[in-house]
Amino acid sequence: LFLPWNVENDISDDSSERKNVQIESIDEVMTPEEALRKIISENNQSTSEGKRNVLLVDTHGHPHLNRDIQYSNHFSNEAKKELNIKSTIQQGVVSLTCAVSPLDWDSALQYASQSSWILPALGVHPWYLGDILSNTTTISNGTDPPENATDAVDIKKYLNWEWLDTLETHLAQHPHLLVGEIGLCKMAKFVREFPSEKGGKTTALQLQKRVFRKQLELAAKWSRPVSVHCVNMHGSFMEVLRDVLRDVLSDAKRSAEASGGMKGGDDAAYRCALRRAFPPAIAMHSFTGTAHHAKEILEFEKELLHPESVDDGGRKRRKQKLQTKGMEPQSDERNAEVDEVIFYFGFSHVINHLMCTSEKARRKGMEAVRSIPSNRLLIESDVHAQEDVALGTAGALAFVAQVREEPIEKLSDDCVKNGLKFLDSVGLQLFDQQKQ
Image (cartoon, rainbow, N blue to C red; front, side):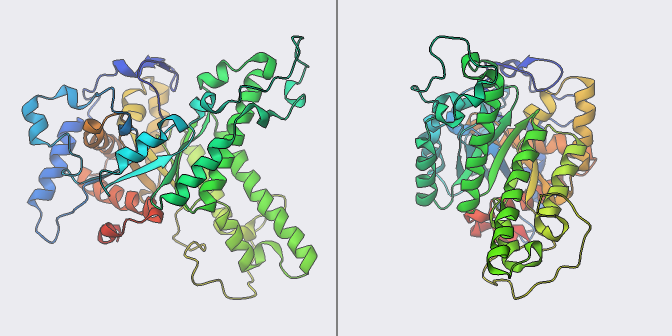
């Protein structure tokens, strides 16, 4: 969740300002400094064979913004020097820096260029659709808008779509580039303040969905993982996924009618086309959904990997024995496999722990953390400065370990493996040994 630290956040029942968040320990969760020291100490005490090059994988942050230092400001200069706080590379941290608007794409790319241990992601965050608005389109001549303003004009005209071509150009030029931060957010200022003469909140949410789907499709086209922001929009998020699924099913049906050959989900070529319609991996960033939401997402993944369970309307159907009429292309590594993971769930210290202050929100949040299969867990710093990357990531690890009642050393190992696998589509061959 990208939030400027000087604006209010309504993610839980209690509004709070991120800039005023205190980094001290809450409940019995280990502090970020304690967690980082423990991880480094355990690795230093390991045998040479057991030592890890990668200690942490931060799968979401915004350190290229270089502002609002929070975690490291709580430590003395001696502690910062001891922990090499400025250099996340020396600490063995692989990190992903996510842009939020075309206005910060260049700075994200420049920041990531300093090391192969830092990967960039570019996208348009749902809070920043205002940066891609067209300045020329109107729908009225000073009179009251029609009852359904969205019917008066194609709402896509409200946006300047040149950014989408620019994003694709960047993807073509940078093979290690991910797509993110993208997504849906009902709490966005863009939604609350979208002009009523252009359809107000209804139009703004529709624009969010269009922008999100376009970026999702681009990530699928270039086989890049995505980092998704989804706040109070789980239903709309699932609608977008099912719309993509339904479109592929419709195309398959038309092909079958034309050729008399392919029969929907029973054909290997169809299954490959369905899988390619989605990105290779999707991370639900700072996941604030419920355990039920997570289960629904994973059920959708089963449908995606096993399309024989879905009819041509995109609905589940009784499972049938899969009949294939030929060999699947062996060169396509994205063919569905039993152990393939598409959806991952990331958690951050600042959003999922420090800013989750109401009892109800905490209870539901912890239930969600406990419900996630261990091979899908990711940890995120979600910070805005390089000095905070390692500490923010270690804090996330400490929070998740406490909630799941797991040793921090084991969870660290699991999250490193998961993080590297999530990033694998953009090439992290240097770390293949730790993905095993």
